[in-house]
Length: 128
Image 1: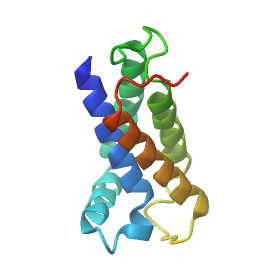
Image 2: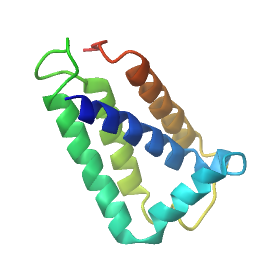
Image 3: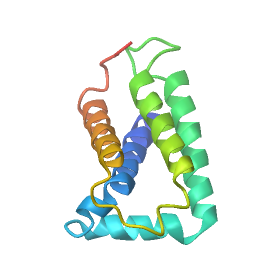
Image 4: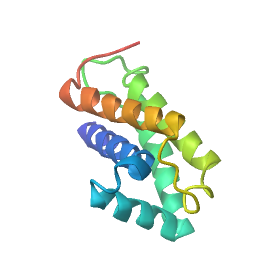
């Protein structure tokens, strides 16, 4: 279903923004607003994480054609799950300390942004 494709791309871009906010927040001010929204209430974080799990399950179950029925969009779904695990692990750390040179988080943010761009530009590519 095409709706899940668009939601997965949007979720990947927003997740990359959350991961790269400390490094590029001064350049792109909407990233600071995104982080403030994410850290402001626990309900927002919970809804974000649950919607990420639902989107990951949906893009695996309903791939963009000509993808296989079961293993359709494995790379974006795996990236969403990895980002969700990272956000769950560091949920309380995000609102307290700014770390400009966190290499793992920055690498995950760039990888997530790369997956979002490739997934958006080439929706029919199946990487198994």
